[in-house]
Every structure is written in structure tokens, then in C-alpha cells.
Image 1 (tube, helix red, strand yellow):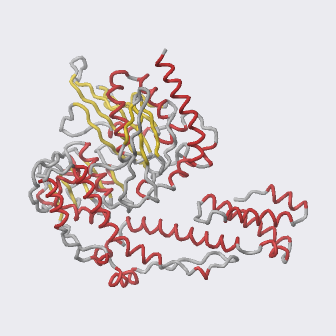
Image 2 (image 1 turned 180 degrees about the vertical axis):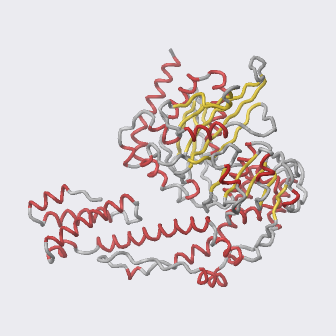
Length: 589
């Protein structure tokens, strides 16, 4: 009885906090939320994948039962949820994968998620074309089964790239699920459906079974490289509070240990969107390493495809392994020995041995020639003929080696490495940011009565000329062929993605400035000097501007939209009654 009361109290507390959370998330969340809406803000579904002797891997259970997965998506989930290497993976293994969403299907609650998405840093924004799968795989001997092994995976499917959060959730629920089965899973989904929306910048309390996870999702306004500490609070009742230091970061130093001496070259390869394959012994090692590579150019977004764990059964296998064209701009994490032959033609291959934190200083390892990579049994290392543009930074190597000698905690080593990558990326991107900002038209060229002026065209040669006086040498001690690196980067998908985002932001800024200029005009006086037809046309245009500002979240001053609405109201009230009625009812596109 006491347990039931406790459960009831918890649910009542969650309900009491709903209004406040909805208000904080924005107007869209103020609507009545249906059962499952909160769940779908975090997860698409939870799957249980088992092994059947006749069918092979199969999705046994999906929660919620009404969640939609196409046959192609189910097939991808089945094969990606099990290790496909010869490493055995006895016991429990955690890893993640990423797969394409079938086209022509909209995400539920997408409008509300989009609203939250806009406050995220660019590298954490969801990609509408992909899902993440977070896996807890168990393989143990069981003589009662024909195959002699119990093999099952609990998988969380989500649009959110919050690897640390979802791995923590799985650690908490999977061992219990393997003992208690389906009713337990229903209770877990019920818990997730009581979570507040994933609002960036707020401390969120997420109850899951007997614990409450306290997390903070970063925002685009956070200073890059800083992490706001989530404080523990004193707990009453029976629930334990666990504060997660991050929702999305992996253990950077541990992941890069096997390729310790090549971190700067790998940063260049990721920055340039070069085809990269990580060959590892297990899916957990492949997925962590791929995620570490993608994160090393943060706060830049890696704009190409990446697959933390990729198998020969993946629906894109033929597309990505064909020899009829150059390898695509993608990072693949693989474990099947078959890939050593299939991907021999790829230009850059990272071979990972067992990922362990070094007890001694790692030895210098040379970059290996691609022709020496015969099988997955080849020695760990980086196999490439790529020559880095920048001179090697010996300082970071010495700093990390000293940390190993002094037994500095891995977390502290990861902080050093993350800061190094951040400073390197910022030194590279600041000259580009400065040049692109100069493409904005002058504010005096913005007229309230004309469309906003166009941005000036990006000129590669003009940009290169700025590097002599305002290049990366202002913030980085590294020497080398920076200009060559920029020329290569300007042809890459990462530049294309970055520039499109900047272009959109600047166009929105111009729209906002034009709107502010319009609001500062005496529009009622203008309407009295013009015909009714022209005035009605103005009102409709102003209404459209208001809708556009709201829809596109234009960066206008707080009182601009209020002023615009007052202008519209005053113009309408000055018109004849019949026109007033029509215009007050008229919505616009």
C-alpha cells in the first residue's frame, strides 16, 4: 500500500510541474498534451531485439505499441542492435548506431521539438533524416537454449544525440528488464512520459525507476568549452539523485588513446570531410571513436553522414562500399573483418585495438601505408597517405604524456584534449566568421519600403587576402600551410553546411532590421495619404511580416512585434466598418 501511495504522490508531483514546464518551453507546449507526447519529445520508441534460430535477429517488442517503424527501419534496427564481429562480446555491451529515417514520414510532435531545437548549439540540433539507436546488448551462456546462449538487446530509438544520457538510462533499466520482462518496460515508458520537455538551459529532473537524473542540455548561448555544473540536492524519500555532467559528450581521451600521436591529423581529416573508416574489435569501441571524431571539430557541426556502427546488412552498404566511384564524405565505424577487404580502397583507415587507458606513456607510432593493411588483424594505427597541412603540435602531446606519467584522471585529460580541439577549431573559423560578417550590407541601405538588400557574394580570393593580417596566426601558435587548409575546406561539405547556416542567420538579421525600420515609420499617416486598396495591401503585407517573424523566429527587438500589431490595429480602425470586419478576420500565409 505504501509503495502505491508513493507512486501516486510521484505522479501528482509530476502533474503539478507540467504547467510550469510547458510555459518555459514556449506556447506550443501550452496545448493539452496527449498521453505519449512527453515520451515522444525524448524517444521515438523502445525496442527489444532477440535472436531466433529460424528467423535470425527480430524485433520482439516495441513500446509504445502504436509507434511507427517501416520494415526497412526495423531491418536496420535488427542488424545494428547485435555485434557482428568475432570478438564474442560475452556479458553486457553498450554502444550506439545511427540510421536513415524512411522518407515521407513526419516525426510526431515535430513542431514542438523544432521550437526547442532552435536554442540548441548547432552540433546538437536534430537531423530530421536520421535516428539514433542506443543499445544494451546481453550475451550469456544458457544451456536451456538450443544455441547455448541468451542473446538480447534493449534499444532506445531517438532523434536526440544525447549518448551519455541514454547510455545512463540503459545502465539503469536494462539489467532489471532482463529479469522482469515486459511489464517493467511499460513502467519505464510511463516514467519517460512524465519527463519535462528537453528544454535547453534548464536543470531538468528526469525520474527513471528508483533514481532521478539531473541534467542540463546546453544552449547556443553558452560559451563554447564551458560546462555548467549540475549541483546535487539533498534527497528525501527513497529516490536517489544522480547529476550527469553531460548529456552528449564521450570520453575523448580514452577514445583517442590508440591514435594518440595523430590527433591533429585526424582533426584535419574530420574538418575537411574526408572519408574515414574506424576498424575496431567491438561496436562499443567503434561507436565511441566515431562520436569522438565527429565532436573534435565542435563548435562546428560535422555536416556529412557518420555511422558510429555500420554492418554489411545496412541499407546503405552498397552505396558506401562501391568501387565505381570515390568513397563518399562519411565516417564509418565497423567491426566485421570483411570490411578490411571491402574498404581497402578508402583513403584513410583508423585501426583500433583494445581501448584501454594507458598505464605508461604511449610510444610514438608512425602513420602506416595503406598497402600494409591486409586484414583486421593488422596492427593498430592510422593507415593513410595524407600529408597534414599544419605542423605537428608537440606541446599537446607532451602535456598529455605528462598527464599519463602523473596518473592524471582520464576526465581531466579529456578536458585538456577538448579545450585543445576547441581552440584549434576557433582559430581556424574566426577569420571566416570575420570575413562573412563583412558581407552584410550597411544598415543605412535598409529601407522600410523596400525588400531587404542582398548579401554580397562570398569570394574565395577576397577571403584569402584577409588572412595575411587577420588570419589564424592571431590566435594560434601553429605554423604550416593554413591557406592550403582553407582552400581544401572551402570545397568540403562542412564549409557548405556552415556557410548555409550563416547565410540564413544574416538574411534573417536583414529581415529583422527592415521590420524594425518599418515599425519606426508613422504607418497610420502613410495610410491616410494612400487609397483604400493600397492600405488594405499594406495591412496584408504587415500581417504576413508578423507571421514570418514568429514562424522564422526573426531576431527582432522585444517590442517590435508588439509595435507592428499596434500599427495594424490602428490602420484597420481608421478604415470603413465593412473593411474592418474583413481585415480583422483575415489570416495570411
